[in-house]
Image (tube, rainbow, N blue to C red; front, side):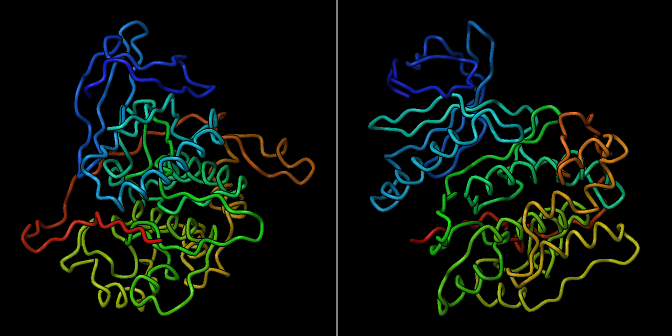
Length: 355
């Protein structure tokens, strides 16, 4: 960054109440992430010792169409952070800015990275840890979004962050706020977590694209399946997050969509299987909504032994508060799967957006 002083706007819950981002007041610790036009760096505030992750979208590397789209996405991302400000399980944004060179977001630093790096520490023998540490916090974050008429549209392990034992959902660049009778009509998200109604449109664009919150439910189901079995369902992968075929090709995606959902016998509880099927119904009208998932018996069964559920059913309110629950650390599993030829592996990083 070239500017020594950048005018910024802080959010109400931010622990750092500043209106100017002064580089002299911060120490740069390390580079956390970098791609085409995105740069994420760990900063430490010299006075308070607070650690923050600064995400910069660098305008000079964007095409005119990318810049136009990013300007809109950045505005939406900031607006949604204001709506979600101070809520548990949502990545805290501290302050933001825009200059001639950058769009900037300073968020709380996540010391355990993101779920993508941790997801294979769990397996089908750690259902309780999965529910308490991953699924219930994720459901609550999505519940906050959906009750505020927001569809995330890009829920995936790379957008779910972990600090200590706490989970936070972030990256709202593809999110959209809907009015009561409004639908999403553009394609957005990451291919391997896209619901069938989006994938069919991606393949041929022969149908009218019209969807709502149910696409987030599908993504949750993929994450649950991947966490339990270390594979994605419907034949999308043969080992973890990789495939021997190019996942961006339409015929490969179509082949996967035709595959029936397979759940290994005697590996998980009946409740876990029912939860997965409630999310991964190919007909979006038959997927359960976020409120139903929060109150699904797979979730309730692991929480009721920790919280007095009788105090939570008054006035027909069955929601549970994870803030009262201690976090469980998952067992670390050694890799036992055979090595694969890197030249024949395609990494699932494909992400698309059209309008």
